[in-house]
Image 1 (cartoon, protein in one colour):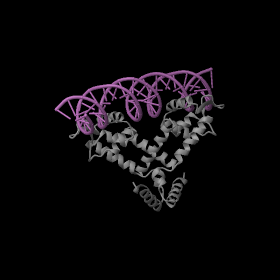
Image 2 (cartoon, chains in turn red, brown, orange, green):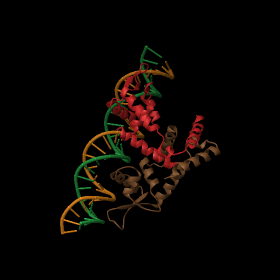
Image 3 (cartoon, protein in one colour):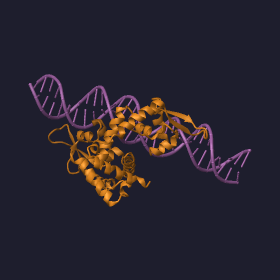
Image 4 (cartoon, helix red, strand yellow):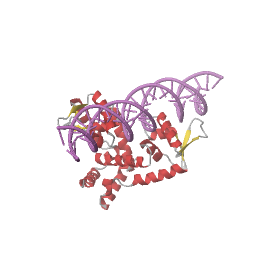
Length: 127
Length: 127
DNA sequence: AGCGTTGGTTGAAGTTGTCAACGATTTATC
DNA sequence: GATAAATCGTTGACAACTTCAACCAACGCT
């Protein structure tokens, strides 16, 4: 199990540097929904970190034109995070790379892969 | 799959702060072998980071008395990293906490857990 | 002996992370 | 409706991580 996580972590870091993004930036981009802007605080919660931390991360994502801050209509304190067109494109390519099965699992037989998928489904279905 | 990694990551961070160690410090301590000191460069390789990075991480682990730098007999350039008695104790408790099955998997039926274990074994056995 | 290489450290620069304090705004309470 | 309390995002201070380039000491080779 640890080995699997280790392999996944390594691949995650490799993909991040491949796109010249830092790990938290990749995580943020993956969490954000191009279809539906969300407040900063929601991103902070998803990333398990402080509000003040996402300020900086979003700053840098905004500098690269991947994300946009928009003020919300219903509450002038909150800022909604919208993924730009370019951000959505990067995000999609990122997802493609990250959705590839990690190396050790890719070598499994088709039956094992199916069985694994079914078990994973059962593990998460009660949420 | 991503959800599983996410859950594991969250637990990992929780355990780290529980022991008042930073994530890289936990990783380092987990990699090191109390039975067999290894050179710094080997730790750097295991952590997928620069040599200069482990210098600082080991500095702080040494400050807390969890790890010791010993000069190697065969080559006076290299420094062997040895886990202290206290370090080994923390390391063991850390392993206990990290070896607990992640939340979603713990709820699986015994048959599914066995099947999962067998699949994992097959995935890694060709290494 | 001399020269290139290697192992670890140092310094600079940038990012991540937490915490406390703050300004602007909203919501609750009187 | 005015005032107080709570909320959202930002800022500043500080510690840790990360990479890179430069460096020193020590090794190995010719």
